[in-house]
Image (cartoon, rainbow, N blue to C red; front, side):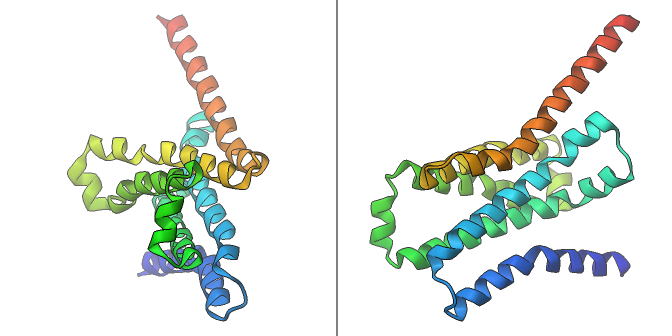
Length: 196
């Protein structure tokens, strides 16, 4: 029971920004277009938070903190998809017309957003224990779709904002931990070679 309460509180925390966004929109405090940036940014941040603990625990070692972080990373990934869907909902309200959305579809920044969302869909749909057990090794390969989804999502951001700095600031922590993981693997490989 205690775990269910903790998980419920954690999901409440994850959904709190979404509740505030939807509330502001429904109360006519903001326009749908004003919510595109915060919903998209939150999706990106949660994706990055879900990706960080693996490389960090590999480089620094699996301690209690990283074990806890790894336990919640699937939740972070699903929440990221939820915010990406919220981003889409705000986009639909902003465009207010299927015809207008189809006219915009040929714009690279727009179709890249759709592609990023599509790549996030399957990992989100199988982010539960039964799917993990059923799919075995394939489960991990499908989950890796989040990497191209993130990169394409960031390109979507850059192309629509015409500013690469904010997107790169978000990507920087992930690039640092990937470099650390690479260094750690090279170090272990050299150690293993010297022992043989």
